[in-house]
Figure 1 (cartoon, rainbow, N blue to C red):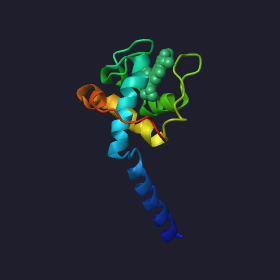
Figure 2: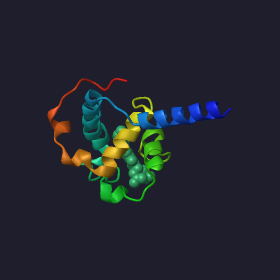
Figure 3: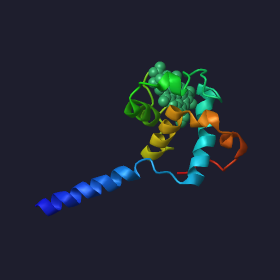
Figure 4: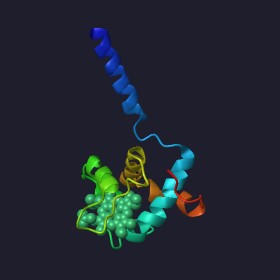
Length: 120
Ligand code: HEC
């Protein structure tokens, strides 16, 4: 019994570490996607447009899970669409981390790269 629960515990730790793991080539695609697709509403520099700004100072204090869920499920009754057909949960988590830390606005990677269409 103890042995089984230890095993379960270590499996849980391993899967928690895998959370939001996204390959670096996929990260480049996602940065591009964020800038162009999300940017069509939130602004190319994420300072807002039809949708609100997605800058770290504005998102600070909002629960991370709420932001990830918003990206995956959209917000009913608003223009924010669901993205779960295009993004995995890990990818939405990764994007949320970039938004919360402001990485997207600090890097030019998104504007310089032109990867192919977003694939799942
Ligand atoms: C068609 C326009 C549109 C597109 C495209 C869009 N959004 Fe949104 N988004 C919105 C609107 C409008 C809101 C505000 C919803 C509300 O009033 O609660 C929003 C809200 C959000 C929020 C919650 C912000 C907060 O302050 O709670 C996040 C996070 C977000 N969007 C991320 C994204 C990401 C990431 C993408 C690209 C994968 C994206 N959005 C694409 C329109 C859009």
